[in-house]
Image (tube, rainbow, N blue to C red):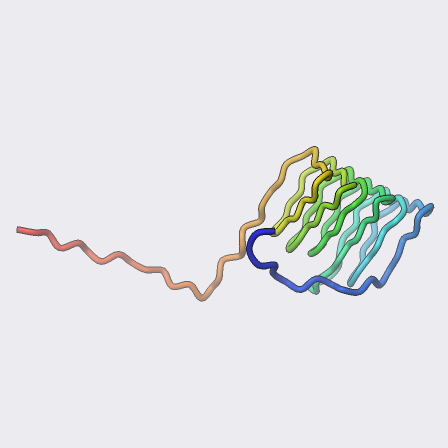
Length: 138
């Protein structure tokens, strides 16, 4: 919401879990995943590439989510770990902590948990300045 968004999100949905589908177990994916159904288990993006998880207003998740980008309009019972960006749309209901770098919350969304802002990783190119001794006046 504030500042520039970092890391380009995955703009393609590679997998879909349709409405009326209930999955029990953990899901590991790469690329983009859209869920319209019910998942009981953790949802984790693989690798270092950008990943996108899109939850429709019909989606119900019971488990931890770990992705780079998340767009949520459904219900989640569990923590969200988004290394880049989280968007909570009007029907989003989160029962758990949200860990994010950049977040957008639309009117109507709710979070029953804590918001944890992830600090930017320190840049190794920063030079530490050592203060010079102060000259004493006569």
